[in-house]
Length: 205
Image 1 (cartoon, rainbow, N blue to C red):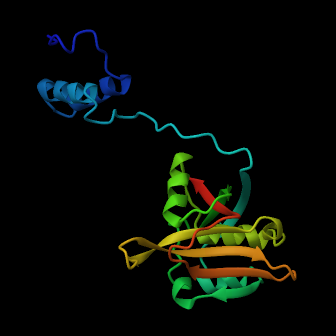
Image 2 (image 1 turned 45 degrees about the vertical axis):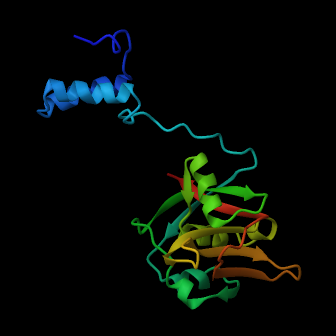
Image 3 (image 1 turned 45 degrees about the horizontal axis):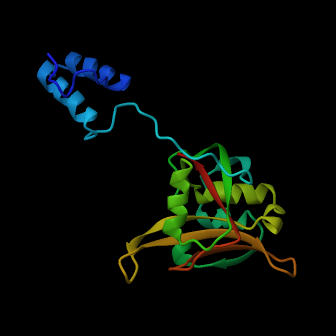
């Protein structure tokens, strides 16, 4: 029997599913009811409830590319056939996804105001996105060398350790063109340096 404070309040349907599952898994009815009451009080997140994300900005661009991550980071950079500004230590820190190859959809968000790396990450989460892996971004710029002429683009990844103030530190892979027409690829570490006027590449979570 429900107590007075529970009467007339229905749990989310996902809680009912969780209730049934827990009974099947051998959890007592009392324990399962306790779980539901905790959810009603907001103490636990309902099972199966989807996160609501913001709609992507109108100026978001997409690129579908086929990427192979079997080569070294150096070979990945060489394949873009651009002038280089590369820190060797940051280059070897470039991460690889678990999938060695496949098709990827990249989303490019325009950064119109100065944002630090952690602020870019916060922006990603609002849209249900995560930073694109460097191999995917390199593949997009290798496929279309002119892309960065108009849309300088980048991605980043966390590096081991932390900065002098305890903050996370990041490596950045970026593609752009100079006024003289030279096309550049950059692999560097930028500490507390805000980004602006860039298109950051990301993927769906």
